[in-house]
Amino acid sequence: MKQDSNLRNNLKSIRTGLGMSQQDLANIASLTRQTISGVESGQYAPSVAITLRLAKALGCQVEDLFWLEQDLPEIEAVLIKSVPCNQQLRVSLARVGGQP
Image (cartoon, rainbow, N blue to C red):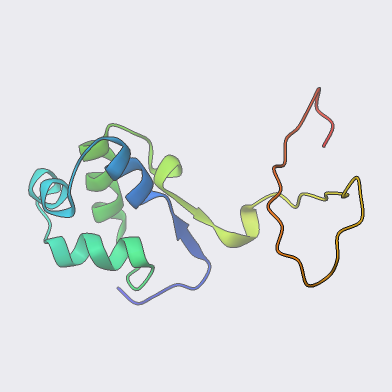
């Protein structure tokens, strides 16, 4: 299947969190390692059958693995102090009591 620029996935994170290599997952899901690599990199939008096989092999729901870009919630954040424009900065976002 072709690439879908709106499709995002969490496949690599879940796979590595379970201590599995691409080949391990491919073997369990009856796929090729190249298919796993293509899905993880976003170069390949898998069929429904492949997404179901991946979810089953990883013990999760399809929705845990795949989502559409436009379905992500927008989060607005306000810095609590000024930062020079040319300075790189790491921030952490969190919701507290339902408030951003």
